[in-house]
Length: 353
Image 1 (cartoon, one colour):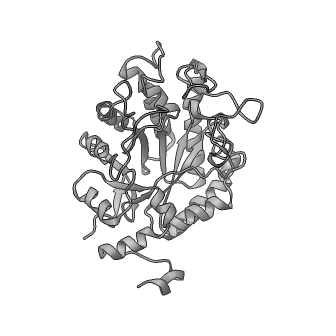
Image 2: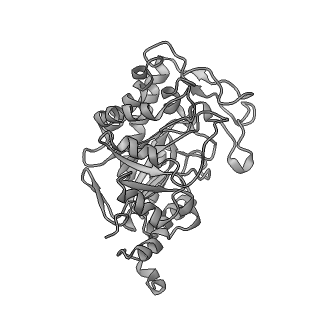
Image 3: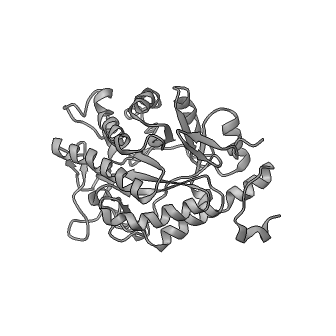
């Protein structure tokens, strides 16, 4: 029997298979509002058989957007548009999840197809915040160092966003602490040079992420899971390490997290990352040995490849990004290749071989 198409239950929530749509920004929102594009984009992958759909990085503050095109959840006014997405995803048999995010010093950028560079304050940009006043790359505007009041607002922003996500109908909340965005910036000794209780030692650098996780869990129902995406390594001896990720995992579990989504990189502008099939899978395997569920992500493109990762006990879920962009119906085709049963949309049965 295929492990990829074996259901998985976390808390009281069951995923019909182990395929997860990785959160990928669409840069198509206006003032944070979900558009028709989002309903079609996520709905198509749900109809295509994906087990869990995680909606892209959704900003808990307007200043926490990577670009002006990012989704937002800083206002109750965003709930209705997001509810359209969650309800349609669920109607197709998939579980709707959402990634809650703050971009930190990597906020205030143009959308990728408009250059992706940091926006000038006079041309649509805004002041960014970070643990320390260190820009992401040379020549960029330095962020404002977050003070105590700002940190409290950050925690409250994630808590309030989780409340809105629940009202919108989402069943999985993923906290974004990867790819060089705010919460990872606090974890990293490269971007965090603070000397207060949020900087310096390992325990201090992880403090904000733990407090955010606790805040989200305080309002997220006990029957629904919380995921945390981390950059398991920064690919630098001076940065956050895989060993620290392993050390962090049980502390996140104690704070209320159920699964660690193991990505990497993003906080060093010129890091040399050895991209290739399964290049991040070893991190999921390492973290999983600490006793928490993990998700493997990064250049996983084939059914056999995904099946092997699960069979070897390296991860519990398979997160797929670009492959699901290329082929929204990957799960339907993968099930056929692995000899697994899967329900097709009734409207598409005529295409089933």
